[in-house]
Every structure is written in structure tokens, then in C-alpha cells.
Length: 369
Image (cartoon, rainbow, N blue to C red; front, side, top):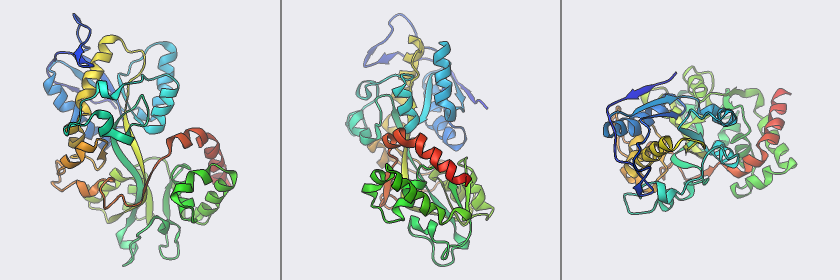
């Protein structure tokens, strides 16, 4: 499905602080690629609606194909016909696209706005900048939800409750992927977080993680889509399960499901924009103009009005306010909130870039046993 938003028209063009493409105009349309659902709605409300109000005559079309960003950009590049202007990509895909030369490298301090606190973009985003091609937007996490009516008076406090079928009998939902599951298995088998990826790089460490997962294998429902676990929890088919924190927020706060959040050892992920290589100058100029606006301090804070993902800019955090429709304070629902982020880890993108294919093949073979 594509959502087209059209309002009325244009602004002076400024890129890198100087007028760009003098005597010509920015393109009057863009195709933005994202994930659909509540996340895309939050982008549309926070970035696109105000941008179009400032730029009458510009048309923005949404394409919900981010999950296919890598193969589709490869195909577009091969035929020399890039139809996308700006693509929302998860960290690993952004790194892969950058390594393959399918998206452009950017100087964050030149193309993005300074923070409202006076910090440069590179200072404001800090470690959220994971690639020379990636412009961060939000921090989200993969974490656990549980049925509050199925855990009695002992709600789980740490992630290792997933492996405790005696205290918490019933089915669990885990993603059909080694990412996060292997890390949690090693943590709950006694490996310190600082050593997890070193251990996981070895055959023995991979076997150790799979052996730990084997202790609950018969109790697991494996999911592929982020909506699966909230539905399984809502239907009472699982007692606990992993998914993206925004999905759990929606089930808890918007749907009033009897679900609690378990933040312990949540895995942080970073989501942001990449610019396809090969855009004509007028289209690239429009993209850069939009990006500078859409990633400023206020816009990233505004996105949290519609979804419980933390803004990637440090200067945005103090501006996080209330949900636009529910009227509840959003800060306590952010994965980056101090109370929620006492035990966290960021997905090691470089590790999974190097080992994903081999470990995933091993994981899928283990699942089939």
C-alpha cells in the first residue's frame, strides 16, 4: 500500500549552507521508503505533514518496502533506474548498502542541523552514527512482554525468566533469528555482556547458546513479523515473548491488553535514513532539504508523540512530551529512559555483518532438528 500526502509549495534551496543548483529548482516530489504501520504514521505526522505545510506544491509518496531495501536497491542500481529518493533502513542494512556503494556517504555536520542546545550533529547523535551513509532517527529495542494475569504475584524482573519454565510455565514467543536470542542465551548461561560477542564468535560459544535455547525449544513459538508476539500475548497463547518495544506499547496503552514490559537486557537497534546513489541533482537537493528539517531536534522529539521510540539526538530527549492522542507522558515508555535502560546492549552490527550468514545457517538447521 502507498500513502500519498500532497499539500501546497516550495522553499529556497540551501544545501551545505549555500544556495545549490542556482538557476534550477529542487524536485517537487519524493518517494520515501519505510515500514508501514504505526512507525510510518509517526514519521508522516512528525516530519512530512509540517514539511509539506512549509513547502506547498511538493508531493511525498510513501512506499512500504524497507524490509526489501537491499535487494531492491541492488536491482535499481543494476538497471540504472533509481525510483526511491530516501530509504528508512535498520543499522545492518544501512551498513551493507554503504559497503556495496548503493547509498551515498554524507558529512553529518554539513548536511544536518545543529542541535537546539548548540551541539554539532556529530556531537548530538554521538554513537548513534553507525555508518558514514546512515542518518539516525530513532532508537528502538527488542525486548519482552508478558501476560500480567499469567505470572501471578511474581512478575518477571530479568530476561532469564524466559528460560525459567518452572516459575513461568507456558509458551514463549521468540524471533526466528539468531540475533538477540543467541546473546540472551549466553547472558543467561553466565557469560558477561562484555564477553558475549567474543564467545559467540567461536564454534563452542555458538553451540553453548544453542544448547541453552534447547532447554526451552519445545515451549517456543517462533515469529517473523513484529505484530506476531503482541497478538499471541493478546490471545493468551504465550506467557511471554520478544518483540519491538513500540509494538508492546501499542498493545498495552492503546489496546489495554493485560501485558507488562520486561526491559532487562533489551537489545537496542538504531533506525535511520540512507540516500540512494544515482539520484539526479534536483532530486538529491530535495532530499537534503527534507533531511535537514526532518532530523532536527524538534522533529525527532515530535515523533515520540506517536510512538515509543527514543529520539536519536541527545538534544531531543528533554523535549519528549505527551502522546498526541492518549495524553500520557511518553518519556517512561522510551527504551532510553534511565529506569528502563539499566541493562541494555546495542546490537553489534559489525559482528553480525561478519557472522550472520554462518550463524543463521547453523540456527536454522538447529530449528529443523
